Length: 201
Image (cartoon, rainbow, N blue to C red; front, side):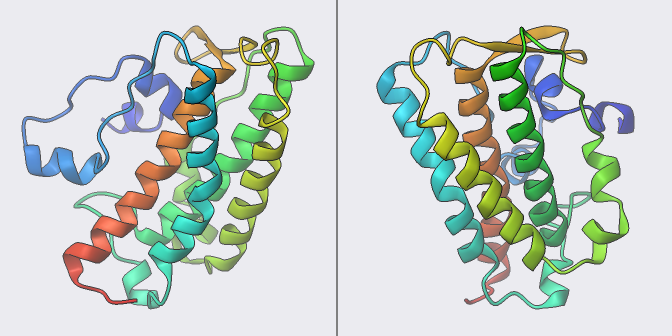
């Protein structure tokens, strides 16, 4: 179970199937549902996904506003990350996805390097560090990638990178949709925790 959990989200999503028959646990793990890739993305789809991606830093800031240290250290589900770890993971993810888009734009179908998400969130800074640096990283990295993606034309979106764990190539239009979902997915972890616990802003 731990070995599967430590794979990158892209590899997991490649063969995503329901992991539990418990609908309550499923809703805690996937509060906005599971990611479903489309065969193709229209200009409208791309614009909507860019807008979703662009809005996530603001939504994250609202989700964590006023939370105490004890609240930030509360897991969003049994056995899951704390709200603090989720914030740090989003910063890690934003930095990694920036690199992946840039590799795909400047190299011919490069092989990207996955990272151990579980291991990174177990490090001292992710477990106990203040969230402000990661909020700033997430905001800045998202702004950078959104600015870049808004410059894309028809030639850029089909560009691909190869993921060695999923053993497949990923188009950049699919990665945009995945990133928008991924960021909203984790913001919803904190938002749903906050709503269930009755924590006021």
